[in-house]
Length: 141
Image 1: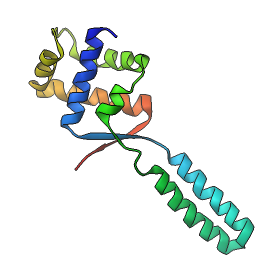
Image 2 (image 1 turned 60 degrees about the horizontal axis):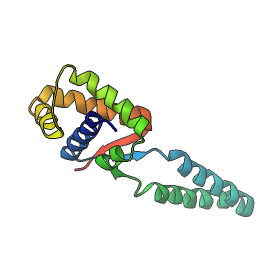
Image 3 (image 1 turned 90 degrees about the horizontal axis):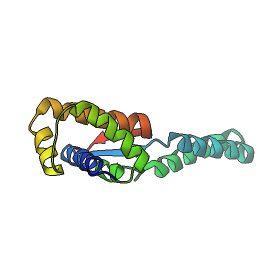
Image 4 (image 1 turned 120 degrees about the vertical axis):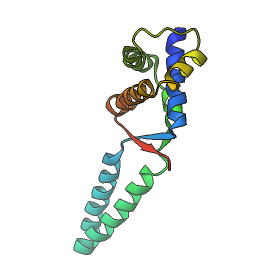
C-alpha cells in the first residue's frame, strides 16, 4: 500500500477515535426474518396465540442477534480491503486538495488544526462508511 494511502487511513482513524464513533453493518433483515419465521412457526403450531408468542420470541432473538455488532470506526477502517481503502483515499484526497505532507503526524496536525478541513474530512469519511459499507454510525456518549 502506498505510504500516502496508509497516512490517510491513519488520519481517518485518528479523526474517528477523537469523535468516538462506532459503526454497525445493518442487519435488520436478519432480525425481521427471525421474527417473521418464528411467528410463522408459532402460528403453525399454536394458532393465533402461537403467532403472538412466536413473533415476540422472534423479535427478542432478532434484537439479541443485532446487539454487540458495533465496532469502533478505527477498527472498521483498518479492516477495509485495499480496494475499499483506495476508494476512501480518493474521497479524502479530493478534499485535501493541494495539501502536501511528509508523514502521518504532519497530515494529522494540518487537518486537526483546521476546523473546516477537519469537518469536511470527517463528513467524507462518514459518508463513505454509510454509502459504501451500508453501516450505521453512532457517536458514543
